[in-house]
Image (tube, rainbow, N blue to C red; front, top):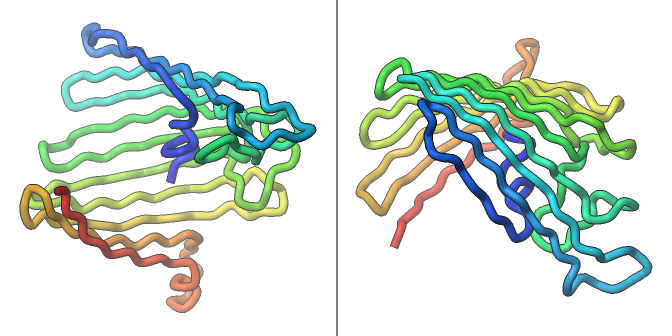
Length: 213
């Protein structure tokens, strides 16, 4: 779970630059252009707009630190769920900030902590919009695949939506270089007071196989 990954971050035509590694430090910046060309013509403004994304990372031996910002701008001021093409902006707000720390305890085992927050919230948030997100993660590489787990503390943006806890447990196995299988369990709303039946109400199971031709 993330507030600015995937289609939210990779919207529009973009150009990016990363500085050389300066004794462990690197800066990254990306400009994104969202074009209204080809959008349905109506009373709304279909003008193009630009957004920005940036990050600062630092690596020292097995320690990895990161700070990031993603401007998830809406295409239209009157309706922030509108999108020209592909994924839309973050529904909770435009400015998304992130901080993370990762540490490789061994070559096979890594743990990390990440915090994300949306500032300057929109006035018309929905029940599913997220304001902030804590993530505690761990991954173990056993050679032929990986076992991983995430715990998320989710703070909702809308006052009518309850905060919740999430966790993900998964693993994959690589039969060969082009082929692997995976299985994953995601619990979307977990409490220590839940019974077994209540836990499975918000649980999703996924299995799959992938072959890279």
